[in-house]
Image (cartoon, rainbow, N blue to C red; front, side, top):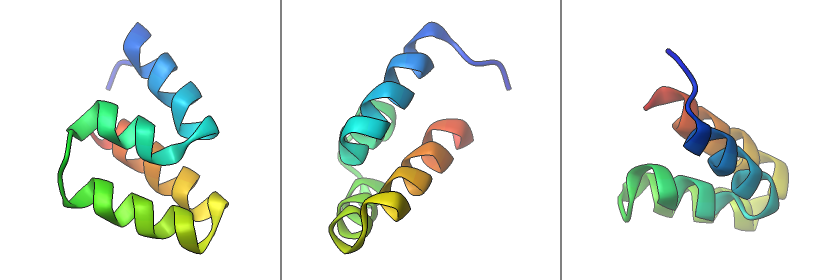
Length: 57
């Protein structure tokens, strides 16, 4: 899987605010709700999940 220029921005936003990176990748789906919950429970799990979602698609 090749990374694009937009993926670099998504990673940047995922580090600052993880749900924003997920929102940019998949839109308003269940993945976004999961990421919001993980970010509320802990910042690092939210980042890990955001990176996973960005790399998966």
